Length: 379
Ligand SMILES: [Zn+2]
Image 1 (cartoon, rainbow, N blue to C red):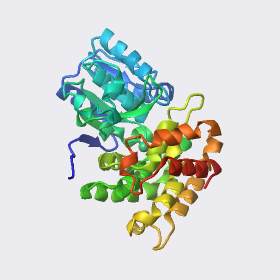
Image 2 (image 1 turned 135 degrees about the horizontal axis):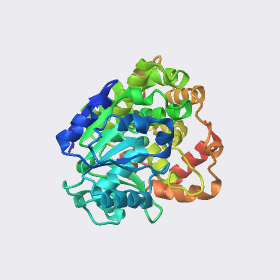
Image 3 (image 1 turned 90 degrees about the vertical axis):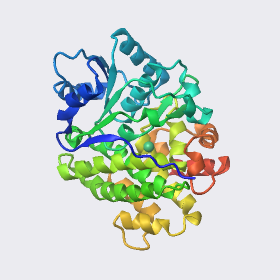
Image 4 (image 1 turned 60 degrees about the vertical axis):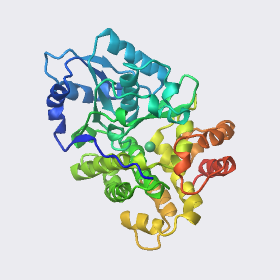
């Protein structure tokens, strides 16, 4: 059985942010809550967004999104939403702000706590369509959460879990590559590798969804041919456009399912005491997981290599490791600051992650532990 669903309204191009007010009016939003983070306040991107909202709209702002969104921060944003009688949300940022905004739109009409809505807790049917309206303005090219059904949030109990429902897809996505021109190189690299991982894991996932496979390969083609240029010269408009398109396509297709890379990076993103960037974690795991999956993927690696513009017969695990090195991704988890003490618990949590079941090769707890060891040592 295949579930195939493509419904998102996306305004995509340089200058798309100019349509923000029109889209707000179409949705009937006049008292928006903007959900964003401190980085975008300091970089001036938030001011750019605000300049496109008419003065007679009553704007409230929550700018406290953490690096990995938490239930506590979601509640803090919800309090601002309720206190100011907001009638819709504008998420401005990368995956963290967008996922946090999805949590707020859910809790605006649904009782907490969030755990009851987590996918692995059987939460999908508990999410009703009557949630707050959301416009997602992407400022990075990686997560694609602006077109995705999921919100990955660190819950009160410490687990980082996905809350998934077609109702959580933003009403409108605004993808304006102009907003990514000032993204620093290390974030361009980390977020870009998230997009590349989404495309590769989707293409390899076991579910049946040929449209997703087609989108994944084209998204991979665009992102791999542009990522090095975007990292080295952030002002290259063509590269920024292609990275944003590759990112959006990666998330549009990953409704098919992800795999072991994400099953490992989700619990690591919930670790206390160290701030680990999701996309950078994925980049570090990807070569090891590609080697692990190789025995079961048939000719799919040839098709991945083709999409990446690589010669026939190229080892794509080595190619990704080389790409990581060229764009400044850390060589290992250890270099990112991960210690050995948490690894057993991460391996256990990976077997319970929502991305685990669609990995092409069934991974046991011991397999995940070995993958973690490889990623600790480096590729
Ligand atoms: Zn991801």
